Amino acid sequence: MDLRKHLIAGNWKMNGTLDSITEILKIDKLCNGCEVDIALCVPNTIISKANETISHKKLVIGAQNCHHDESGAYTGDVSAKMLKDAGAKIIIVGHSERRQAYKETNEIVNKKAVSIIKSDIQTIICIGETEEEKNMGLTNKIVCTQLENSMPSISDENNTIIAYEPIWAIGTGRIPSIREIEVVHKELRSLVSKIKGKDIANKMRILYGGSVKANNAKDIFDLDDVDGALVGGASLNSEEFMGIINVCQVLYK
Image 1 (cartoon, rainbow, N blue to C red):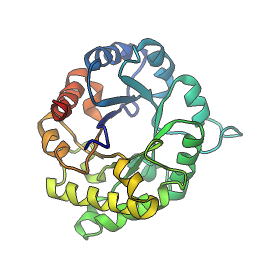
Image 2: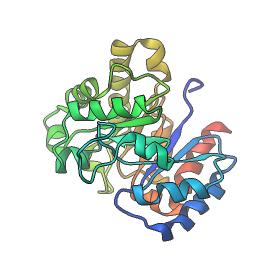
Image 3: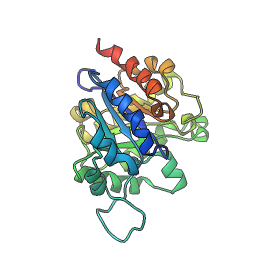
């Protein structure tokens, strides 16, 4: 684990207004001095204010999606360049909610990731299988196909983070067995090694996401190929989010 520092990233989804800055400030204050990296991907409307308000000692502010072009006639869309201008340091792409609701393909996710990387921002590329695919024994095939086609050729350990989020575990309170998480993460790192080489694979962070809580995080973080978590609902509450962060902190003591 010396090669990869853990990242705990919160995904606020469509939650949060300017009133939520107080919760972000609580997290910012509580995480100062932490050894792990911490990010909050918040709604676009509060990125700028959050970025202006935090101490920048540990917490970074990010976004949850972007358009793949830098500019153009795309009503309602926002580019990576615009999000960077607002203060975003990291952007999620390929979340299952967007893949399903907006029919985003691996190719679209790839284009978005390219745009983010070229804007000098880190990207978190999400992948994950449905419950039906899991029950059919297709988990590894599905996530490896997603990763191979979603990860740009310009990705490396500095600009790209992978997040494995089984779709059936998101917001359900259910998670795969620790052995299942271990197997998928090993498979993903092996694939990165084949595509990018062993050096990049050993340094690229692979997060787990899907119903992560303080009471189940320890066993997940103990796995060699798990480098942190992408946290949904629990990241909206400073105490719950810090509970997960504190579990991860133990690895550095």
